[in-house]
Length: 479
Image (cartoon, rainbow, N blue to C red):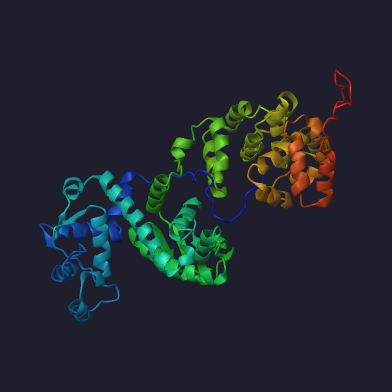
């Protein structure tokens, strides 16, 4: 059954997608060895027993030069001894040496370094908890949060038009929503990040893209993302599609980055469930949660929940959850979830169409219609008997996602198996007994792009009952 949500624009509904995290020992290793984290830790340890600092809490120039030499914090472009010596002698402050200044500021921010009263030293927290895996991950998550905030501040200065959407944060959120191993074009990240702003013109898009690239490359120093320009000859079909230019940069969220972005989402109050926790939720909780996910997140959620049980067990659990007539959204989600295993449920689904209450029978019919397994006469029979109720479910459920989504779904013949049959089903909406039949007809009348279909729906909207006339008890005109 085709998905009913294909918009490329990133959107968190109420929940981030389900993810699985790497084992802690792997995450700790990757975090501790990420370049920015390693430099911050090394500088914090190097500052012992004390290091003189400026009023800005940066190492004094002589100490900065010593740290650069001791820890090898040379600019990447300087590879020969003579050029390094000349550069080191030309330094006027520690802030001019970015490979020292940035991790030092991060270490102070994360309380790895205690800098006060003109002296810096390793913090007590660093000395006491340096070897604790949980503390390493706490520092690293804080480092990523700090780096993202700093990056968004840079965008505020360089591209003010992109500051509102918090483009760096949005890019990370969008990467989190993609399936594991996916790579997204830089252009698409910018397009999605600016989609909800007032500035979507080509000039702003180009400036935002030019500003975002070096910031994402800097974030790669945390180990959260990888940014690269691949050989076009090696691209897969996915990278060739969409709006990606031939020589675009691709961005990938690493397993460590997935841990970090989840931490950011939780800090923002966005639910970010784990796959291991989700598989055992009830059918009611499963179906009710699906509207909260993005398109990619919904695919993962369905696969996670359905894979944790046999198809027949899934059907047994779902049945009672969709029997109430008012549960249209649950039934549509259920039909799409069961469609993934419909080939193993055909006989049970046929039995439900004959024996279950109308709401559950319509859900079963919806799955059968989408399965592609019915002979023509069987298809027509199921469509005639269960189609009207299932179609009201579809319209009512889609309308809950907003008028724009309803209009999009109605204009897309591939959005649902019932979309192409709406015109033949509309006359039986009211007779189906569905409590949302009148509202569904009105929604079709207002939003269906095919004018004859919209007019048919409008004609089928039940007229209000005639007003009853009665006389005043004391006589006079009727009222």
